[in-house]
Each structure stands twice: as structure tokens, then as C-alpha cells.
Length: 105
Length: 172
Image (cartoon, rainbow over all chains, first blue to last red; front, side, top):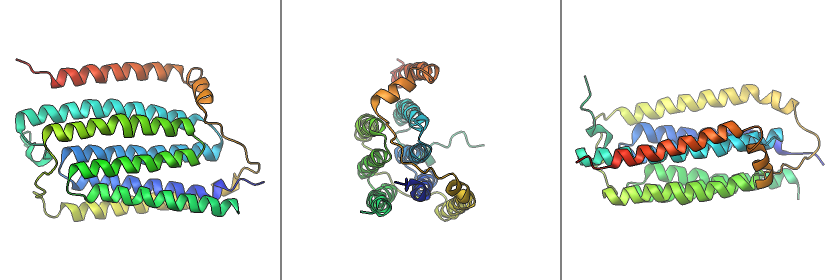
């Protein structure tokens, strides 16, 4: 029985690329800092999908281990990022990233 | 059933859910709806992990992402009362330029995929080998080849925890 997965792999990578692009659009277009953060999570996840697809393709578990590490890094990033957003909200009373422009030259 | 058609159908159904929820996350006005759509998206990616032979990773995805991270997001959204932010753009031309640039990015990625596709087809594996992404296999690999990164990760989590506490503390 032949493994048909190599024929499906481009689909997974394409979906991963599209999800990543949607995340990029979110970061560039939305002004709400929390939604920008969620878009970053979406981008991390699309990369995870590509990792797992390649792990399946190569029959190696290393891709899944990398996904494990990406998830822990994402968790750490979210904890620090949301703490930053809360701290900014305390002083600026806003999480619109356009309002945080006092360092503009 | 032909295994190839089976693969296509599974990919189509779950991929459609992932795509629709991602776009809905991007376009919904309320941050709460965005967060809930992102939860759905993460769950569909978890289903992909199951299909791709990673049950452990799939469960971790649901419990860590959809469980812990998104609860944190919802908590902060509701704490700040930031469900609706005024959507006015200071730079009216920015969305159009952003979408153009992202289409260019997507085109480049697609081109790279299309150029490297023949080499994948050449390395097609013949035998169907089971990929045991079981907790046992992952754990063995994690505590042998990846022991050092694993320990570094624990330090990273500790640093993030301390950082979050320090940043949100009232300095009075």
C-alpha cells in the first residue's frame, strides 16, 4: 500500500501559507492591540501546521517536538504581552496602537 | 475508499473550517468574537494534528492554546472592557497597501512551493510507515535528544511568569 500523503502535502503547506498571510493582514490592518496579538498566535499556528505536515511527510517526530517548543514560547509570549497591554492600558486608558505614538520623532 | 480521496475530503472539511474562522477572526468588530473564532481555528488545527499522526500534540494544542492561552486573552479583554475599540484609521491608505503587500508575500510563498514541488514527488516514500506521535514516543525524544532545549524552556516560562508579575504590579 502506497503512502498517498506526499500528494496532499502541498495542500497543507498552501493552507499554512494562507493562514500565515491572514495573520499578517491582521497585524498590519487591525488597531486593537489584543487582536494584533491574536493574529500573531494565528501565524505561530500556521507555522506549527507546516511543521507537523512535514513531520508526517518525513516520518520523523522532530517536527512535533518543535511544535511543542513553539507552544511553550507562545504561552510565555502571551503572558508577557498581555501584561504589557494591561500596563499600557493603566497609563493610557486605551489599547489602540495608534494612541501609543509618544515616541514618534 | 480510495485513501487519496479520503485525505482530500478530510483536508477539505477541516481546512474550510480553519480558513473561515481565521477570516472571521480578522473581520469581526468585537474582540470577544475574534477570540472565540480563534478558539475554533485552534481546534481545527488540532484536528489537523490528529489527522497528521500527532495525538499528543493535538491534545496539547487544545489544552494549552484553546484552554489556557485563550482564557487569558478573554480574561484580559473583559478586564479592560476592550470589546469594542473605535475602528478609525489614522492612515486611510494603510489597509489597501497591507493587503497588496500580503498578496505579494503569498505569491512569493506559492512560487517557492511550486518550484520545490518536483523534489518532493521524487522523494516519495513507498511503504506506509506508521508515525507514532504518542506521548511515549514524544517523551522519549524530549528527554533524550531534546533534553537541553526542554530545560531551557522551563527557564523561559519562569522568566515570563516573573516578568508578567513585575509588569502588572502596582509600583506605589
